[in-house]
Amino acid sequence: MTVASPKIEASSPHVMNTYGRLPIALSHGQGCRVWDVNGKSYLDALGGIAVNTLGHNHAKLVPALQDQISKIIHSCNYYHVPNQEALAKKLVELSGMTNVFFCSTGLEANEAALKLARKFGHDKGIERPEIVVYEKAFHGRSIATLSATGNPKIQAGFGPLVEGFIRVPINDIDSLKQATDGNPNVVAVFFEAIQGEGGVNPMQPDYLRALRALCDERDWLMMVDEVQCGMGRTGKWFAHQWAGIVPDVMPLAKGLGSGVPVGAVVAGPKAANIFQPGNHGTTFGGNPLAMRAGVETIRIMEEDGLLENAARVGAHLHRGLMKALAAELASGAVREIRGQGLMIGVDLAKPCGALVQQCAENGLLISVTADTVVRLVPPLIMNEAEADEVVNILCPLVQKLLQAP
Ligand SMILES: *Cc1c(COP(=O)(O)O)cnc(C)c1O
Image (cartoon, rainbow, N blue to C red; front, side, top):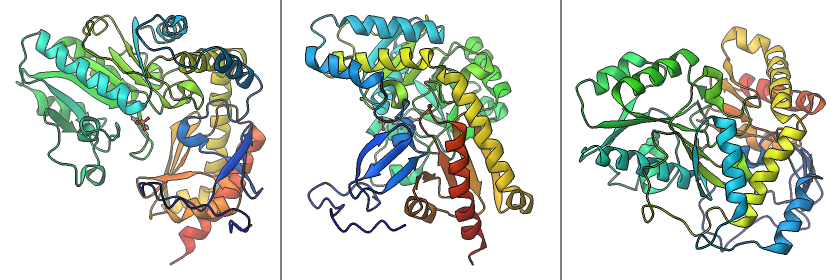
């Protein structure tokens, strides 16, 4: 029950100190289970922050990646990479959009989206394009994407921020209209269909439909950051699909490569031809290993019915949490349990960062975001017994924390 490290010290004095790390170093995994270097096992309800779509050591993914590594890892974009076309074709088919640009991370995908929006404006003669973004949004930590992010803590110390953003609250179409009415410089709205880092805050389907109509009416690009909520996590390929809309630009990353860094920007007809040769690029983007990881991830997800699994096990987990925390929900000590599929946030009425370590000590990996929200984003292969185990470890610790003065 203890995470003390008698054999191997989990410390890194020469690595730059950018993360508040737990005193744990993971060594290997199998399915939804991981082991640390001292042999202690954990149930993984974090999935490397919504990255390990297929869990660990997946029997179909590993041989495919081994095969790819033995053939070619990287070739560069001076040449064609056949699996770029294969993965792009698949993403186009799943999204109902038309073309894809590949990169390696979420912030890079978002950076490309922001460049698309600005050039969309410039091509229309708008010299100083502005983009609507949201309170509590998270889009990454480059200078542009942290400027789009709606969290002062992430921005502090990095000014001057990039200009050209208009910030509004989520799920409030009147605020959006008020903030933009009469402004000819607006070119795009940029948002997460379910805010991840901001505390698992879903955009309402009605709001998304109203937003789609407004974007059409005013010729704005609708840009949905699906980096965290996309790739099957909610039980549909992309979270915005629950609202029956199709965006113009969709950045992806996290779950797309099951742990191999893969990012993508999917564009619809309104945005697909904005970039011309020379406008954008990145060395690692679309490399053969990354593309193989993306192609195989989607193939295995389809073969193994993981969308359906995410929806079913996610609903089971949601119900289990509601039941175990019924009294706390009734008293208001738990404010809300929200999310969809295997993206769930348990919002407590008090800060709960301490739960991360307490859960780890008890063999469960989770995260806490926005100070008060327990975030569960496990691999999409999680089964109902494992979901029950998450509830059984997490909920008593939540109750204990809530009862403490
Ligand atoms: C994680 C995340 C990003 C940033 O992705 P990186 O790969 O860390 O750059 C951007 N947007 C959302 C919604 C995210 O969850």
